[in-house]
Length: 287
Length: 164
Image (cartoon, rainbow over all chains, first blue to last red; front, top):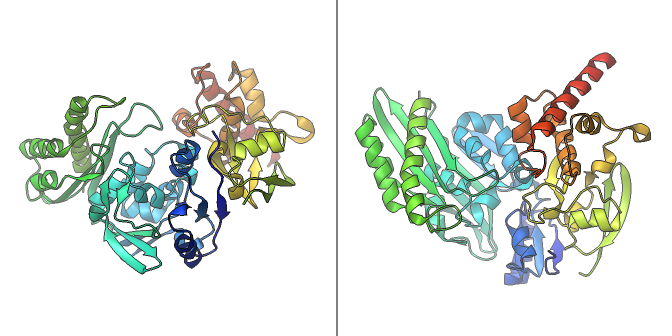
């Protein structure tokens, strides 16, 4: 499969990339790791006249953990996240989720920013970012702005990012020390998107679950924050009744389609199962 | 842009290739440089038959454009063997342990295993299986591939100890 011809650009800095996008308008697309865009180009579902490759822009790489605030450069690869000690210590759910994306070769090129930015409902990191209440930095010719991950996803491949903007960084407050977390993903095989997946981050103090965020992957045309599911646990002892209520609340907002991974009814039912597993494991890991 | 000059290092040799930016790395290797070890399997980034080493990382060369490897270092199965063409311990072990039947996945499998053993010289079975999870084999059922990689690790570790 040969993609349509394009002009290739490798700007050395962000300003150069923004300028190229402004200059070429909707003829131009940004490529990060390429593992979403290049398959689309090979199928000719994407035919950019200009490809703006972000790989040479050093300022988009790397992870910083400073006083509880985590900043991940958009071009940081999924493999780098898995290997980043400070990030894994502060927020282990990111490593756990990244390890379930595709396979080792893909994670060597696939980036955090690409996975979060493009709005593919099958991507794993968006739900984690919803659970973390992360903020995305978008930069374009009009300047820089921040959008909450919870406001970013509008539908399949439809996001709050405007043409000409680049997602440059993701920032969030690390969950408190001793928090519990889990990313449970059911998939048919290595490399597949989730049949259903859930991210759970919670904190406990004494016998009380003081906070819980729950988000879902590939169970609608966008990642879903299961706010009522989280609320069902927060402020309770997170016993059997509350867990069941949280699972029911998550299942109630799932709107999966029937596809090769299963019928809509099966995937809806699976939502409750996977959320339960994630909650139970998160509770077990909480200090 | 119709064509561009791409300069890169392949198997230790500096090369210059005139190619369209949209040329995929797998085609650049096979058709421009006659390195037909890396195979085209699925052409969709799933099967791993086209796996090569790019700047010290295993990648699927059907998912990288020629334009993106400007200045890069690439190693293919042709660059794995030792001096004088002596088989690499991984190649020996795949032969010895029947780690291949039809052989189609083997170049990608060995190049991936080569990097895996660089990253982790003493992987257990789980680490090997996880490490090659991006490489599909439809013949062997993987058992003998895992045995071969483990045997090669032992061989390479023993050789390192002897050197020291």
